[in-house]
Image 1 (cartoon, rainbow, N blue to C red):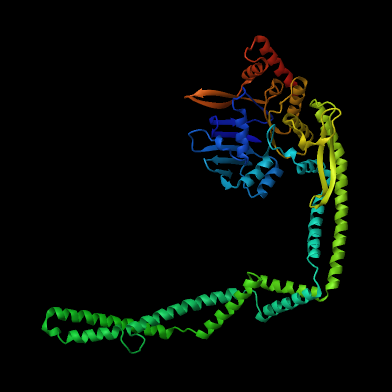
Image 2 (image 1 turned 120 degrees about the horizontal axis):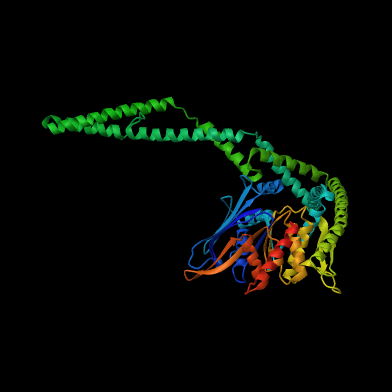
Length: 559
């Protein structure tokens, strides 16, 4: 259920927090008080697009945060399968909005808007006059039917989906198998060349790893040997001849020694050069010792490098690993066998595809039969629920059309409705009245209460266009549905508000020359006062108050 809503800097709301309860949560208030902003902020947190004007004036950021407590193990499992970690059965959805972007998070981790919508669809469903509702989608109609018939369908849908994937694979293979003699010969020749190239390489799993390690050792050794040898050549430690540091220092020392007796300062220079000459001599000795103790086999290094080049060439053509290259050779060998006896391959493939199609037809027919049988019970129950909601002479059926194969079978199903005598049945998606559609959604939700896994339902102005007896019927249905779901409902009708398990008032006021909306829970007497306002308008008399109390007492019998 939705435990908490936190909104900051959205439209008329500076900052507000709502603690929702189990059962039926009712939101009421004067027209223009900001009720639509509350629902809009929830929709925003669920991943809907962010209107530019929604950010409160003079504010740089806005925030909407929803805290859900998820007790249903199936819902928790579905959320975890989407890669969302949960703690203490709590899921927190939030969106931070700036002037140019919105950042979505689930349990503190940044996610895409699409992932946010996926998770939100498992937790909450919004039904309102101007929302793009799930009931408008024909795909959703089939999902509702399958949920209603889930016990009868059992594992048949999973078997059907697996069979469809196998048939699709065979069909794709068949459609791509039309080769003439010349094409087969050309492919055979090319495959034979590729298999030969792989086989002649005599690859073994793990060889590339061993060679790469050996190459790195050789490459470093060569780099070291080259650098030390160059240093030796520069300082005279390679035993060679020619002008180098040792020779130059020795020459300088001879020149200075020839005149060092004439002046103390020159004698000091002589000593300095003597020290340098001794250091160079020691250094050259170390180089000679190091070079004589190290070995580098150019031929082994060359062969290692050549073998790695060969392996990497094969990787670029056949796979990123030795295993993939060898697997590629195996697949190509199998393909060669197919091409060498192509007619038999085609006959076997066609036979397999036809058998799989027969199996698929049987499963599709079986699933379709179960659906059509279940659709009669489902539509009859929904029609009865619609009558309870004061739809007079309503007709509600489901129309089936056979389509192309899919993982769900060959059925396309759509709810059809006629709400007035003499009117033909029309697709539910073409129902114009948002108020009617909300009541239809309520009827569906009531019938599906035992199978629907979505714990929280929001109804935005479900009372649109209704009054009197219809309003009373809607309120009773809402109360019934609230026994199995958390319901959050915005309403203008006291009949519905009287049924509240928790009643919240949304008010608009002026603070510091700025208009703000606030929402707060009502105590028992405050709720009666709000019911009286809804009943009596501007002037609330004792009679109106007593009517409100009576309405509240009558609602208690539906507890």
